[in-house]
Image (cartoon, rainbow over all chains, first blue to last red; front, side, top):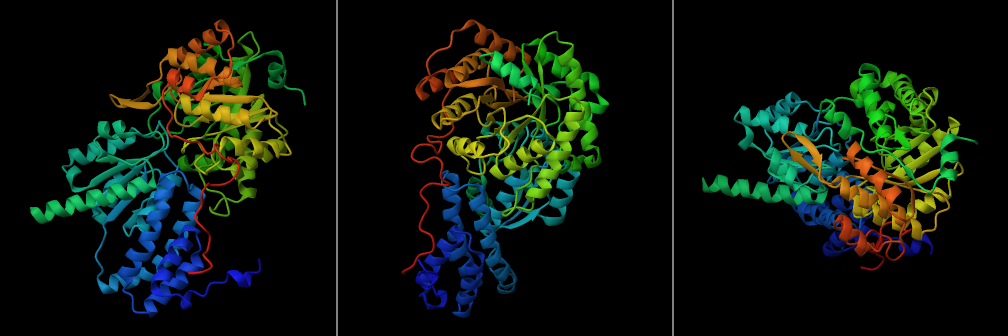
Length: 234
Length: 340
């Protein structure tokens, strides 16, 4: 099997073939190929928004589903997200320029005492992969850090992550503070992390528990759509 | 290399390990967000009580309060310069309690993950991981730990780095991974793949196995996966006491002492030699587990149906060992397509 036999010339492919190829390349985490394909589609007159939604987001949705279904695991997803990021870096300034519709914005961080950020990073990457703007405030966030970020960024969604049973109750501290300040309903609050479950998320007053990064994306989409509907109805 | 755990493993058919560290410390007043390891210096009596509770409940082996005692984790509390000290103290308090117990009790120096992703996908290099684990291992050794106890690992690269650190510290070691994602580790390692990976290490552990993960049933399925891959070493089972629930501002696990007693006996029937709990496992659970292991006769290998009937269902239908569990992820789509 010589390399020549496998070589695919991306620019020789039709639009439809190229988009299919991009989905495969995202799945395999091939960053250079994704960047090249994004440039080709731009040259062919595609709008940045169409490239984002029809190629990149669609491709990451497949990755997300296979992650959710236990076919892909963290290493493969990180590679795919990295390839996605390469494409996004090209598209981001163009999306702003063209005034493309926003999917929504999320502030995400791991709670105080918890430095586990693998799951949180994964959610951030998958959310970006789905077209959301993500502000990652990192690990070990006290309630003040969350409030500052919410004030500054005005996101649609607050995401909190904890990987330890010793740190997960801190999520309630953050939510209780939001309630006390009358700000709880300004945000969709999503929580996640290995020791959490649905019941816990209800008990602390979050909107939803997200079992993994793929579920986080689906849940975020649903809640943001619901919020927009309420706004246009009201 | 002669050592206390190797001796005990050759003398006994099973050993009872300990239960939860975090859950117990939480009940003693550790606040959400604080580093438990700092208590080795600041609240030594509480750490003594944690260890003594496990020993009094019948544990033959307990883990030191040093799970997050590597430089990467301690940096969060700006205590990265205290790695040696906090590990030495955690082990020394354990030595004190073990030596005062009047029987042979093993002090196992807990070594948890760094929390970072290893190269090439993440930023943590092998050399840096080995360095951090080695620093921690030397502290545990200086405090008198009998064995290093590497636990809750997800990535094979990190497991190997910790093994290398054990060799550098010239310490015997045990190592468990956490199978919490559809029966695999977060990084996709199956039970069968772990057996293969451990078998190839040049510096062999005294025992290996699984800890934490989802619930007691999942852990036993993982154990059966180990056994089917025909490992040469004794197996460790340290499962959580059920599933975490939130009550009045604190976490409580729904597994009863009776359930954990059944789990302990089933773990032995599955082939585990070192049996303990993990999150949510309190002294009353350990007592029930000890009594069950002493009173009930060993039985045949349980089926998956028997396990789920006794302990509850599994978190996923499959665990990756069904067809060829040693490969990476199953059923991948084609790689780069050649013809459009």
